[in-house]
Image 1 (tube, rainbow, N blue to C red):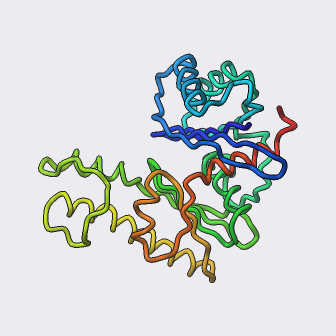
Image 2: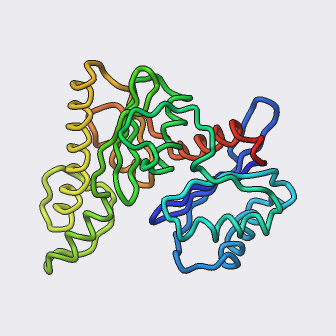
Image 3: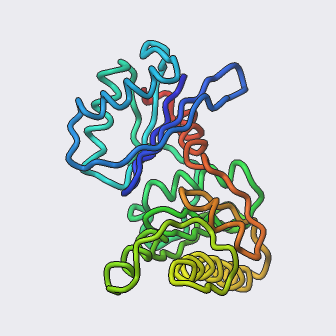
Length: 261
C-alpha cells in the first residue's frame, strides 16, 4: 500500500492506494487541519488513528510520497509517517522526476501542489487543459496541447474572501458556504452567499473564456480542491470534478521515482 499526502495551507489530505498488478485502488481519502506548531509525535498520532480507523497496519505501508506548500510542516509530517510505518516517504521537489514540460520563467518557483495536479491532469485527461484548484487560494493552471505547463492565475480563495468581507464590514456576519436558493439574495446571508459563490463562478467562467481565446482552442477543464464541488456546479463551463486529483498525481510520481526509495 502507498500513502499519498498533500500538505496545504489549511488542510492536509491523505490517501492510501492499494496496488494489485496494474490496478490502483484508493482505499481511503481523509482531510485534517494543517497545524504549523504540531510536533512529529502529534502528527504520528493522527496518522496512527487514521490508519487504525481504516484497519490498516503500519507494516502494510510499502512507501509514500508527499507534496507540501508549508515548509515548516513538511519535515514533521515526513518524520511522523516514517517513524510510525517504517516506510520511506519521498518529497516532491528538486531531484524528483515528473515527466512534465515547463514553459514558465522560473520552474523552481512553481508550487509542488500545482506540479502534482498538472502531472495528474496530463496523464488522465485530454489537452489543452485548465486545472482549477480551489483551496486557500484558487489557482488556475494552463497546460498546452504539447502537454507543457505554460503558467497560471492566482485568485483569493473563497474562504479567504469571505473572511476578509466579514472581518472588514461590521454588519456582515460569518456564514457558511452552502449555495443560496436563488441568485438574487433577499436577505443579508443569502446575498453574501450569492455574491461569493456566483461571483467566483463568474470569475472562473470569464478566465476560461479568455484562456480559450488566447490559446485559440477550447480546453478540457478539471476542478479540484475542498470547495470545487460547491462552485463548479454554478459555472457555465463544463468542469470535470476530481476530489482526489492531487493524490492520483502523487501516486503517478511515486511510480516514476520508486528507485529513489
